[in-house]
Image (tube, rainbow, N blue to C red; front, side, top):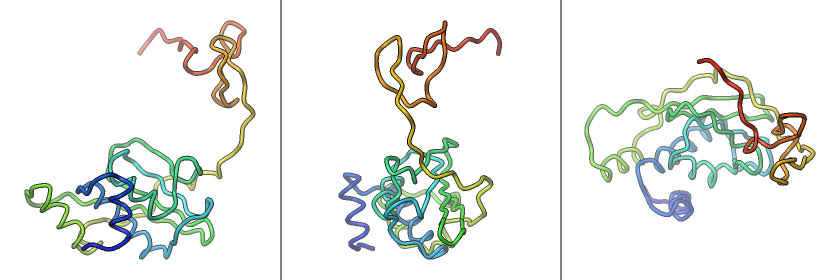
Length: 174
């Protein structure tokens, strides 16, 4: 299965691979289940539970990106993607099913690209709420390193405003 969207995903990612194919098919599933199109702003939100190859396809095909604030990383390590359509208040969590047989990389990629979405994924409701829209924060200058950080990432330490890099966590236990 080669089409323009797949070629666009490969061009952005740098190479074709089974991981990219997973994200590609997750986008197909989200479009089919929620009727989503490319997100110009934050009308579509994707919460990805991994930081693997498939996320590149999601960025290219859905318009969800970290910079726009509608691609959110939730590090469970699972091949799971929750899509939210703010306009219609709909959502779906798309979870990759375990593969039943051994395949080499090329076979696996081909299988993923050719398989029906219901064969590849389990569809559930997300177990968490739709994240709030991205906000703008005032920048605060760290009194240790002199670099600016958004106010919600500043900590007080010894009476000084410091960034997370300069902040020394206090912990005496487990």
